[in-house]
Length: 382
Image (spheres, rainbow, N blue to C red):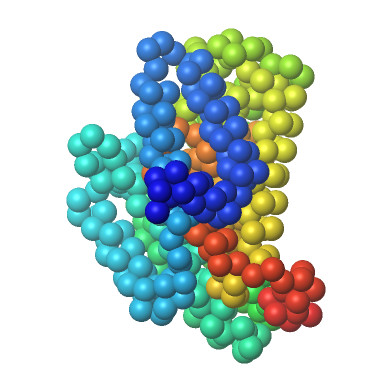
């Protein structure tokens, strides 16, 4: 075959397997993060390192779009991923590097690896496999308990690091996938009610006053702006000071003067809002809306329930991280150290996000052209 024909064939394969609207939206979000990062300080190591992670992430995205991921349906593959993930999280307690009181990453010299990020994809694959195999009998309460146990193992190991942000996201992934899997809502409410009663009992008869105060401050950080709520308070100032059009690129005083902590990761939304204002925030919201819409659209045409559930789980991951991050930045949710997809600095989360989308694009290669009513009948049982 002539080289020109090979090139043409490769281009056609890429064009057919990649959702270019989805990719374009993520690229715009990455660019917004880079521009905001580059406006903080000079010289800027965050900007330069993030460029490298972006290139690696995009390369993995396109590489994975060529792979047939039907092998992920095998129980042995999923069990192996779960076992490897558990071992890696356990090894963190022996070889992990301490950063700001949390032992949540491996220092590999030229870069650090935070396992809790790729673990989120493992949770999605695990739950997609579990619920897709038990679709007919999914209404039984044991599937809430068993899926919850598998998730809890990874959740608990991440929570102990302690990485509260990632632990919350893992819990939200489980919650979201349970709700869309067709599981009995009555049984779910029973489990939720038992958990609420147990917490109420602990609150009334077990927790000491100082423990209650810590929990209350964690949930409502702005009640202690000189202590635990300082970061949330500075973040809300940054968001509010952006007003309609923002202060302009490079003129965000909260981040440049370092009143805003972790402005390249945990509070980049606040730094962006300060410089770009309400108009910029609306644009970012629309871009995230496009990303979620395209992920769900691709999921709806998955070849089997496994592919559909994986796509839905990926959408839940991105929505959860975005909602928790923004809520944290505007003082509505506790400060848990959660990055926002594509905007925040960091290689582990960025590569995980592009890998997740790359897997979705690989599944897109063997999708079905089914009518949405057929998918509803099979997936939701309606």
